[in-house]
Picture 1 (cartoon, rainbow, N blue to C red):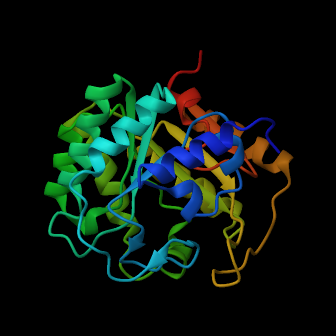
Picture 2: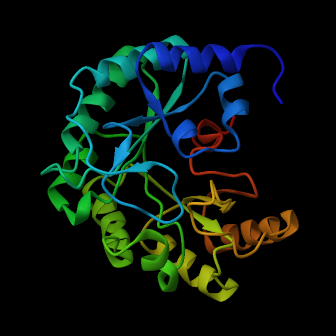
Length: 272
């Protein structure tokens, strides 16, 4: 449990500015730690997702209209928190023609203008919309993060029928070709029933697609409504898998039971 009231400062600021964080909506176990360090992962485009992934506790349904003032408020909150590295994620918006890409780009621009911080984007797959991916790449975030979450065999059962593992790989290749200067980051949850062989094959696919930053964490069932955890990996197994990933060529790897996609994201980009 963090000491002091810094976590309350972050939570109050987020609430007063009418913003959402994936820390809250995904019931992240690191929320209090990160809030106490005055950092958070902003979740834009509302708090209702058009998909119903079986692992996720974010509400599912028909979202409301996009808030045009949200990019400005995200930038203001990032400035108030003194963030040097800002992580922006979103709910999936299959109801929007561009999946929310333009709104994402406006948020990146506002954050950069207000703070000068490096920016990491963690968007949806945009439903296979290549133009939407290109638009966000052209906004020039320092890090483009996207998570397959699990191995191909479990993809549809974990992420649902609208997700496509092959598109995830193609998307990374497209980003790399369009802007080789963008860092590609990816992550998986473990303990969903994957085998070690399947995991290593998936990591090989992701490395081949251009990813060099990697997170590996334990899947924890957010509530009884989500799919159950199949297996809990001991910490030493995460250490072993992290070492194997580095041997495969991933430049920076965070692997551990409580590691999440944006956990200590700044340290992965700014290691010193």
